[in-house]
Image (tube, rainbow, N blue to C red; front, side, top):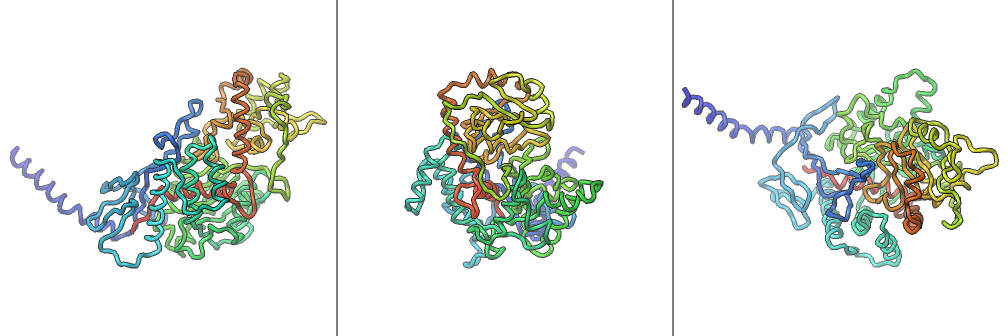
Length: 513
C-alpha cells in the first residue's frame, strides 16, 4: 500500500512537471506582455536605502520595489496584474524574465536571440530605459558626473545639485533628471470634453492640478510625445476639482462613488480605442489631482487602479496612498493671475518670532494645536483669526519657524508658503508623504513634530541650535527652486519635479513582449 502511494505521488509529480510548461505557454500566448518591477530605486546615497524618520516612519519610506506580475487576469473588461510568476532573475539590481531565447547585455537589458533586426517601439523604449538605469547606477556607484554635454548651463546646474545636502543622493538625482530630459515622453489623451477634462483650476489651493493639465495641453513641453507609440507614460487629463464643481455641487446628494464611475468610464474609452492600458494594466498611466477627493477615484474598484499612478496632494498613507506607485503633489495657493508667492527678504537676525501659525479649526490636529497655543505665548504666535492690522505674509517673513499642521486632509499650502518665506516648516501631521521625498531629504530643511508632542513645540524648537537653524534656513533658498512654477516649465522646477517622480515609477517597471 505504501509503495502504491509512493508510486502515485511520483506519477503526479511527473505529470505536473510535464504539463506546467504548456500551462505557462498558454498564459503567455493569451496576453503576450509582462509587467515587471525593477528593484533599483529610490535615490538614496547610503546603500540605496531610504532612512526612516523615527517620528513618522512612513514619511521617507519609498519601497519602489514590489513584485513581478503576469498580466493574465481581467477585471471589468480590463487587463489587470495579479498573479506572480517565479521564473525571474536579478541582473544589475533589476528583475528580468528568464527565457531560453533571451540574453542580457552589458547595460542590463534583455535581447531575444531570435528577435528580428528591426525592433518595435516598445522594445526600443524598454532598452532606452535599461540604459538610463545603468547610467544612474553608475552615478550612484562612482559619485561622478556622467554627461556627454559640457555646456555652461549644465555645469551650473550640476554644481547647484552636487553642493546641496538637501538631496538623498545629489549625483544620482542629477543623472536621473538628465536621463529624463533625454528620453522621457508623455502622451496626453485627447478624449473627453470640457469642463471636466483638459482643464482645471489654475489659482487658489488646487492650482497645481490645473497648471499641470494646462502645461501638458499647451503643446510646448519637450516631454510631449508626437505619437503614442513613442510614449513612456500616458496622461489622463481629468480634473477632479472640476468634476466636484460641475457635477457634485449642482447635485450635492450624489454619492461620491460617481467620481470613480466617471474615471472608470474614461478608462473604458481609452482602453477600447488604444492598446496601451491593457498591455500594462494601467502601470504606465497617471493622472493629477490636488482636490481632497483625489484618492476617491479608486473607490469601489481597487483592482482596476492597483497599478495606476495617482499624483495626489492628499498623499495620505492611511487613506490608501501607495508609496511605491503614487506621487505626492505639492499644494500651492496661487494668487489670481500669478505664478509666484511672496518672498520676504528678511535676514534670520531680524526674525523676532520663534514660531507662527494662523488658520481656522480644520481637522483634529489643528484643534489640538489651538487648544494648547492659541494666543497664549508671545514667541509661539498661534491665531485662529488674525487680529485686525496684522498681515499673514509679513508675519511669516518675521518668523524663524512656521507651523504647518494638517487639516482634514494631510496636505497644506503652508508648507510651500513657508519655503518661499524663508521660514523653516514645522510639519505636524500623520501619514503624510511629503512631495519629492524620494529625492529630497526633508530633514535637512524642515522639522517634523509628532501630533502627541504639540504641547512640547516650544521646548523642541528652542533646543535647535542657532548654527543648525541658519543651515536649515539657507537650505530653504536652494529647495525653493523645486517648488517654483514656470510656464513653460523649466529644469528642476515644480512641473519637472512632478514629472521626475512619475519618471522614477516608470523606471521601476518594464513592459516585455
